[in-house]
Image (cartoon, rainbow, N blue to C red):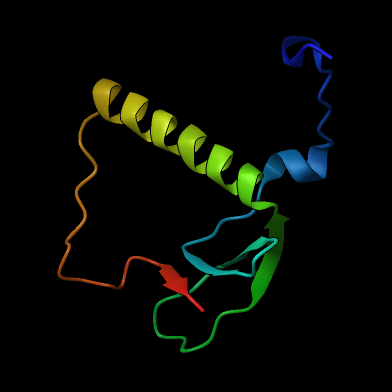
Length: 94
């Protein structure tokens, strides 16, 4: 099947999305796991609201797609600065 002809549907609830500023990542030999959560100021716990599980090949394809999207954003909007000294940007390896 030609990927350009795939029909993709999204219902209203899913289209509204979920905000996440914390992502926990883990992997085994056969899968990558991404747990998305929202961490609020002054609260010392966060509840995972979405778990995405991918095969290694799909995780790598996702990484490449995200890289392309971020590069396009930075070209159009501006560089996204991350303080390399700070490990508090919301991505944690379990």
